[in-house]
Amino acid sequence: MAELATIARPYAEALFKASGGQGAAFKEQLAALAALASDPGLLAFAGNPKVSALQLFDLIAGIALQKSLAFDPKVVNLLRAVLDHRRLAALPAIARQFGELVNAQVGVRDAVIESAFPLGLAQLADTLAVLERRFGCKLNPTVRAAPELIGGIRVQVGDEVLDTSVKARLEQMKAALTA
Image 1 (cartoon, rainbow, N blue to C red):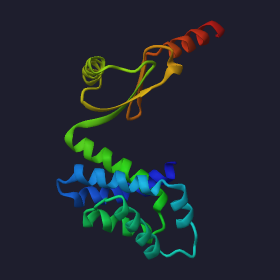
Image 2: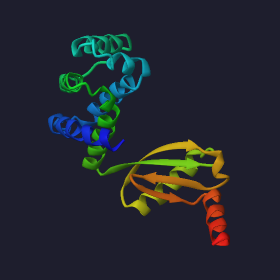
Image 3: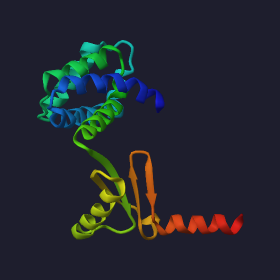
């Protein structure tokens, strides 16, 4: 996993420099490309040494056309460079790192909020306000239901994790009692 992140960094940084203020639009386009590149069938096809970069590009362009996806020429150039170096598997990591660069530019961080029960809009707004004060920045939340938490929430922002779930507290009590 670290290897893909290392491979992805120069591509993400180059596109970020080339984006010239269009980071949000490029972020969406790159996310769409990453979704295409995550397809196991496409990855298997790309792994065939007899398939050229041009054939792979034509296939991806055809799929994008079928799905009515349009890409900026700079994003297309990035795709061509990735395919020329046979690094299609790194495209999701490139999209993730590019998204982080765009978010950092506007002072936003991605947050994954897992809750034992579905959160209502009012609960989410209140939780988000508290978390933004706690982390000191605007957050872009992704909310998931995780019944295994039993109660409470677990929040991941970057490499920081805030776990106030019942499951985590039970684990802490178990560790304290067995120590």
